[in-house]
Length: 243
Image (tube, rainbow, N blue to C red):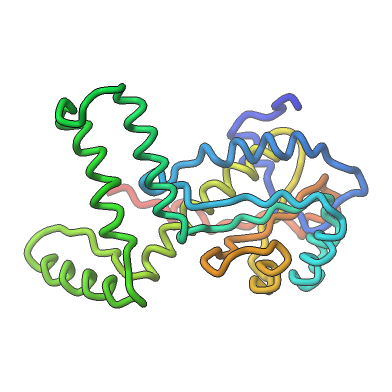
């Protein structure tokens, strides 16, 4: 489907639409928008996310129940569930390592230059030091040690399990925004929803324990009644701070 709007036009046109028309939407076009989603920036390029494109009416019905039959999910023609996969950090780090080795060329490790060695070390040593934990104990120890060191110099402080969960969810949210703006650009509408029984959704999608639901996004063509009033934003001068 041809891109119809510029980035600025799409951002301004996008609204959280709660009621959709009966018009069906093109599954291939939605998938293309999800291909744009995976191009979003992501912490350490780990891409700790998965995207579940729900086209099955039976699965949609189950997720609709888990989303409390909100109008957005009830009238949506398709759904997208954004899932974080912090539990896949080892696999994704290894994928980055393999990509780096391939891009550096087929040569002995000892011939790597300083930048190449740093990049390899980043995924071999630094990433494990951030993600390896034992019931939250190691993360807490790292957090306390580095915050103590932070009394004397700038340090990275987000070491706890809860911090790393936030990192994964931030990356997933960036991808979700890429997806929604892409949908708007081609004339489709969306509504990101947090109100849901995430455990039930995980069961519907047969997700492992380590997966987490970031958001459910309803997709369709907006019904004029689906826009609940004019857009409200805090005045820009109240939130913009030039330093």
